[in-house]
Length: 297
Image (tube, rainbow, N blue to C red; front, side, top):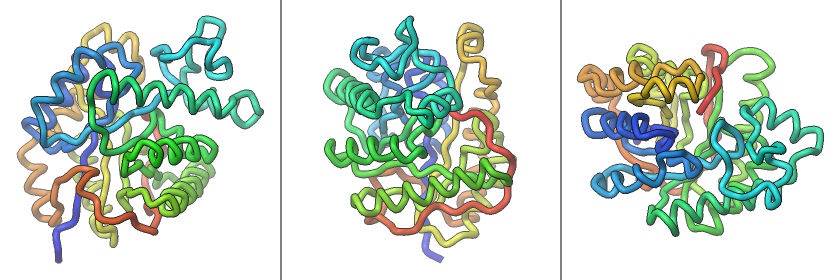
């Protein structure tokens, strides 16, 4: 069997200095090969400079239209994305409720996402290998259209295609949107790993769950796999502000475990980045079985 590519991507870089330091530890001493940087994160300016010392670490954009942190643009510029205080809706559920009832203007999403890309590339000097979104909002087809257009216009060659193995209606909807997103990206000649894991396990990617996930995904036929994760070293203040119930330290311990590299070697998985992806594929990520999705970052 030829070794296949495994991209282990840590989300929420820039959320705080403690989260960012934990992600870097998961790269330096573990298996994280790529990060997604949150342009609206309070620590993005201070922690972006740390990425320059790690040329082997892939860097992408984690675009946000929801969450605890404010947007880059003013309420006047993106009125349908914010409340009277100029703050985002907190969760994907609130965003989706507004979007499906016609209260979100995708032009506002485009403007805010464009500003976030400008901050990462023009202001902070980052070179982006991929784009994804906070809480996977780009699974929703209108947001997917915005993200696809921005990736193509900016010359960012890859976009995450999340999926879920969860039973029930929610899992069915996610898988349907995942296939639609994969088809959209293929038409646009944008690359993506054909297998994915991490949405269902978000905030709880412990060593046993990571090993079980990659074992399941490696049994498929995909040439490239992405697993996204959330390691970190949060302060008490981080836990209070981002009260998601995430197990950041446990994820960090699992991702730096020496046992994990042995598992990847046994499964003949080669660690790499989004920039190592082969030519854009045409198959959507597949998922069989699993646990109900958790809130994702």
